[in-house]
Image (cartoon, rainbow, N blue to C red; front, side, top):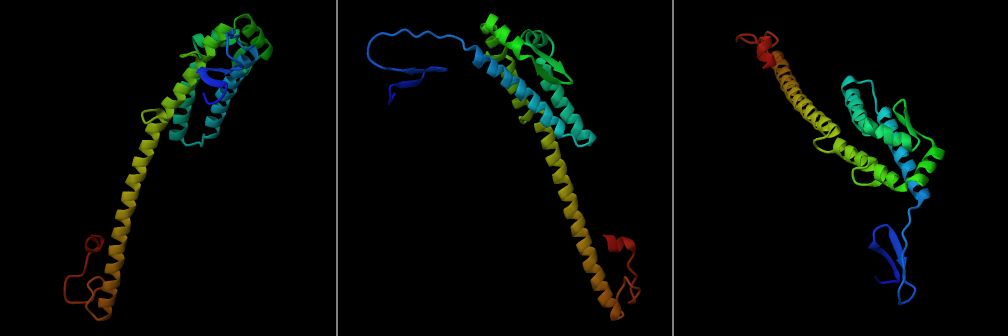
Length: 205
């Protein structure tokens, strides 16, 4: 380290080296920090659901995709996780998480290691929430697949538009030519000339 403060020697700890010699480092859990992390998890979960709700447009296809995403994210806190959450003062109401801070603090004080396991450890609720969100927005996730479908539909419509523009342009050009020829007594579209009059099929070709 370039200074006497070591920030990366032990993950999550900052060590300040005052002098050479021997020291003891005691690592304790911080109940306040754990409670703060749990509150952040609850807020993140609720904010995500709120934002997904705001995206509903009334379009059946789009809203079905959003409902599927909300259900898959909601599954994170269902089943066995419900019991874990209840032990820390977290319940569900209308799809949102409701936190009882007093119960949370008491549960953390009684068993901080369990709180870390439920929320912070690999495979914990926070880890699963992040994984589910990444899965949803990935190329094979619900949102990724829907976005790819929308892009394909857009490309198809653009191709159709180009074909329509080309057809209309050719028809307008032909109309103008025939109109000019009709003035000289040679237009087929407007009945002039000695040849067979143009049919609608000729004009639309």
